[in-house]
Length: 361
Image (cartoon, rainbow, N blue to C red; front, side, top):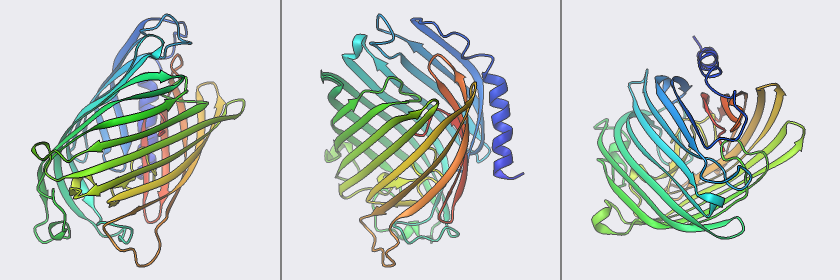
C-alpha cells in the first residue's frame, strides 16, 4: 500500500473515532476534555497507534479576553519501533496577563542520517538510534498590549545513541555523537494577537529568543542559540486564510550533533524527512492557503524554501531547497476550531505524508 493510501486509511479511522467525541458544544464553558485512542501517519514514524487526550480550562471570565488553556497527552508506538510520550501545554491566566507554555517528552527513536549541509544525496543515508528526554518551559508576562517577555528553560538529554561504526556519522567532527546533555537558560520576547492558537485565522505571532548553553556543569558542549519565529494570518475572504511563516535557528560555539539546526517533518518544510538537512544554522520561509470547503471539511495548498549553513561548504551553490504540497482538513472540535489534517508534501528528492491534529504553523 502506498504512503498516500495508508494516510487516507488512517484519516478515515480518525474521523470516525473523533467526530463523535468532539465539536458538539459551541457554548462557553470553563472546562472540557476527552481521551481517545489515536492513530496518525508520518514519513518518519510510519503508522502510529496509541492513546491521546486533551484537557481545556478557561481561567478567564469570558472567551473574548482569555483564550482557553490546554494540556495534551500522547503516548504512541509506531511501526518503525518508536516510542513517543509527549505532553505539551499552553496556560493563559485571566485576561492573559501571564502565558506559560512548554512541553515534556520522551522519545525512543530510530532516525536516518543523510549528512551535514546542503550537499546531501537523498538516496544515501545511514540509520542511527537515540533516546531523548526533553523539558521546555517559558513563562511570559504581558507588559504592553499583546507584547510578552519572560524567562525560558530548554533542557535535552540524549543517550543510548547507536550508529554504524564506519559510517559517515562516526567520522563527523562534532561532539555529542555518543549522547550528552544540553540545558539552555535565557529569555524570549513575544508578540501574539491571535485569538486561536490551534488554527489561527488572522493576526501575528512574533517570537525572538536567546538561550545560553555555556554553563559547563549542565552541558556537554558550550554554545549559544538565537531563534526567531514570525507567523502571519490573513483572511482573504469567506473561509479563506493565507498563513505565512519565517523561521530562523542560529548557533554560536561548539554545537553538539544532536542540537544542530534542521528542517523537515510535520511542521517545517513538509515533504522533507525531519533532519535530512541539518547544520549549524537554518532558515526557512513557508506559506499556506487554507480554504473551507463545506461544513467541517477544508483543504490547503502549501509551499516553501529553506536552507542550512555554517559547518559545511556548499560548493554547488544550491542553498535553497523548495517544497510544495496539498492536504485536507476536518474540524474535530468546533468550539476551539481544532482541525485534523492530512498533508502530502514533496521536496527536492523527498516526499512525505502527514496525518495529525492542528495546523503546521
